[in-house]
Amino acid sequence: MTPEPVASPSPPSAVVSPKSPRATPVAKPKAALARETSSASKGAIQAQPDELHNQPPEYPEESRIAREQGVVLLRVEVTAEGEPVRVSILQSSGFFRLDQAARQAVRHWKFHPALTAGIPVSSEADVPVHFKLEEAAR
Picture 1 (cartoon, rainbow, N blue to C red):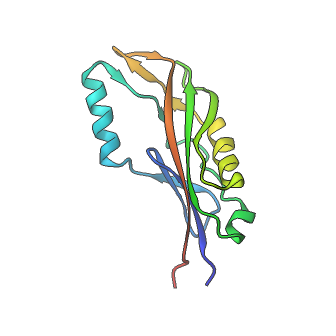
Picture 2: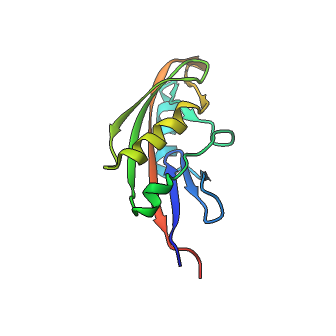
């Protein structure tokens, strides 16, 4: 069987399903929820991608064929309106195509802006994107 691609940012997370070359949202890890909760108690909530409306990254076909996998860690500057204004790579997956696919997708995402005392503010968010090949179900 041919392995199927998986691409996922976490938190927020996304996974490419065997039926689709795009990722779909996955629940936030508990650590992310704890970090958000602890920030909220100080009056600040971090910017988070809008998991319901963002197009997940596509797994590049050439990367799938070459069996390239990895995690891209992106830093996203987010406006108070939830728009990404700059997306930079903090840590490469080790594969140019995967890095660029992650950046390209996140550039078009919408974010829930960071909040300070309930007021939207500009901020930065670190977004890991996981690209993993998974074996197809038998």
